[in-house]
Length: 369
Image (cartoon, rainbow, N blue to C red; front, side, top):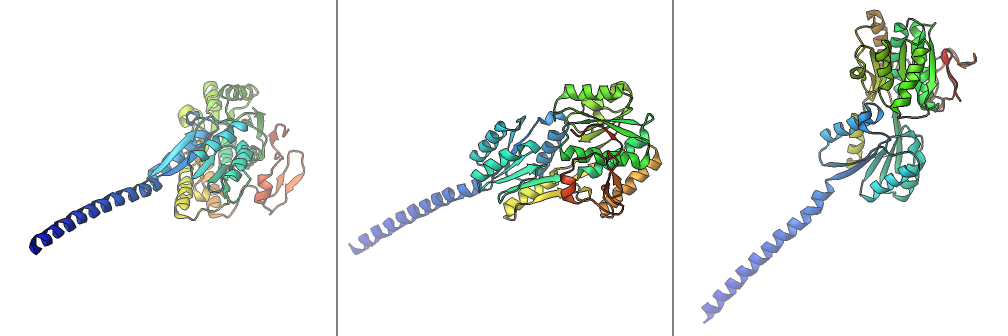
């Protein structure tokens, strides 16, 4: 009788052990699920245009794709063609509500909208391209594209025969003004007689207006066209007219293979990768990032073989000086459009002075208003 009871007890114990082990396995599976979910990082982007612009938005989208190739487990949520203002605020709000842990906004005019949403979501990180505002959970980031602008200006200055170079600009905000000035200083470094004629479109992305503006400059005698616009339409206008051009944002040679001399280009991939990795590592901090050609965030596209070898060597030497930090573009003496000295010989503009630039250098033809 005792043996029978003992056998029953053993069977009960065995059944209980199987039940406990089974529950333990189920519990482990349940606990693993949140860990797998936490490994997926939602990252938001708000684009002012569409990647098909071949310019500004395209360059950011290429940077996003590069980041994805470097960091597995990132879920990107991209909102395209979002206007500045109230629409931008709604877009940042949407991405925050969808669980994005970091959100990038890629237009200067997004600043106020992003700051407003950042204040409502202190646990979300916000990144404003080309902006100036910061908060505990909000950074701004940009690159010293004026350095690449200067180098491209050297190329343009060497190739003009009429000494008239056209520049299709977006707005006369400091970012655009700084680029025009840097480009003009590069032009004059190799051709002091050349001038840069500026047409303002008051738009970042309008292919029709951009092309028409370039055509007006060509009709005015310009034989090289440069741009601060988001599409290659100014390049196409130059190609159709049989004149030279200098691109911006990405290598625009494919759009004007016979006319394009080079382009000032962006390389956002490494920056997006390091920023998101910092967030994952817990080392992200609010900052104002302004990297130069030495950090690879800006560069010059390959120079056309139409450009004389001696000019190419001069450009390479200047690039080397920039890479080593031996020299920067806004080193005096520099004279303003109205003839006043803005930077004395041997002096260099500070970052704050460059970021608030509201005057044209001598050699620019166009109104700052």
